[in-house]
Length: 152
Image 1: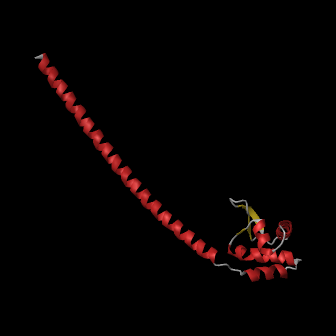
Image 2: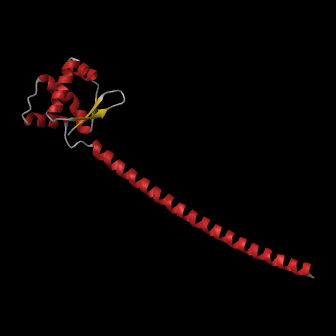
Image 3: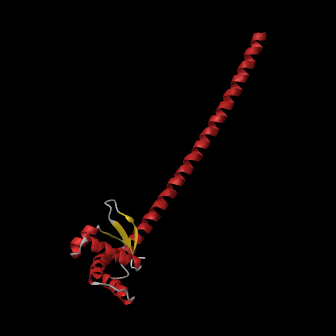
């Protein structure tokens, strides 16, 4: 009789454990559903953000590609500021102006010298003069070592 009572108690304990296990599994399932919904919402948000950033990047590229100033206007502005420009400085400035009005000029000294017919040393002096006079500024160097110049 005692064994019978013990078996009944054991069965009741086992049933209670199974109910508890079922409740825990239900809670886990609900938590996983909540996590899945949250991840889905995050993914939608990231997609919206990525689309917005792409739109912004396109508008910046569009704005960036339309110069507000022509190379001729840039050179005329520099001359109007009564900057003393020799023919050499004007040649270097004229070579850089189209790239500067589009955003940045990245040319090696040797390339400018070849295009303008000046020596590398003279091109270097002309670039220093343009930098000192505030016509442009250097923002760094490209991977090939060419200086990167932009308008101030």
